[in-house]
Length: 463
Image (cartoon, rainbow, N blue to C red; front, side, top):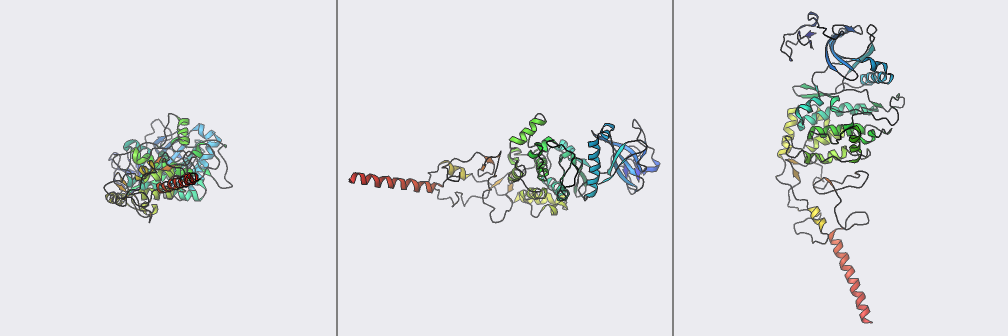
């Protein structure tokens, strides 16, 4: 292994210069380690992990970059704070993180290598693979919004990692931008999911570490059932969290806001987010109008209505941007190629968006049908729906049919107008099923009523 004499970063033997400061690299054994204020620097923990520099400080422990002297590989070592190590529940969570993470495939989940107590210093350490890149949180702070192709590739990687965990009855329960790590490559980001310490293990023999009714997770991305501490929480809570992250990546803001934790959770339980296509109208990266339906379904408060898996969510987002195939194909596709496909979808978009004729017809149930209207009350000569430079994604033979209304919103039936957004129910004559009768049926009914009255009056006068 080689090391930078200035910043102490570690690199493979074939590396020549430090990308951070341009210094010529030397073999690690030839680079003295400056201890500074941390006495652990330059020491060897667990008899094999050489600590070379401080990477970060967190609430649970301090993270170092080092070298595993047995395997000659770069590692990240998290040394738990003394107060955390004394807490039995916290210590058990780290043990479980090691056990669960080490058993999962590691293409898109950080690899946890070891968890042990150093006998000399008496500290607990969690050893992981070292990742080059940055958390999604830092990207969002710097760039506010990220382009569709980057979102699509990121979601594809997260779906591959999480779907495997969900298949093993493991719910992450703390998905947030801080726990999605983007490793930059020439073809685009390679995403790694971090921190399986807050997981809910739904296997029968799993040890329970959370008291019933306790809320675990980050408020901005927490599903309603998770906010209530319900025991029925399952993989669909991760779907909700990932949808909230996606919404933030597209619009630059989280879907639910508040001044503090309780107010954020109240917003999640009682409010609906603004449709993303209208929230970021005129933004640098236009949002496909079909994304409104994708987000509405993925952020549904009722988990029985919500998108069933993160894989389905990742695929739906790609389709909303006009892509074909599914998330597994996009996961291996270079980001530049995804950008080209998204641009092609935008170029195929028609030039104008038709007026919502369905609302106009509903306003006057007695109005005669227009000669230009088709059987459904829409203009057959009008172009397909389009907004912000995107065509609606291919949905098979029903591509021009209006999207079905979301079954529930705040526990009440909800209807959509022709634009696809949640709105108040259209006014009309209520039918037996709570809908509205078509105008021609009203006219027939009025005519029959008039005929009956006329016949009755004729009989009366005849007497």
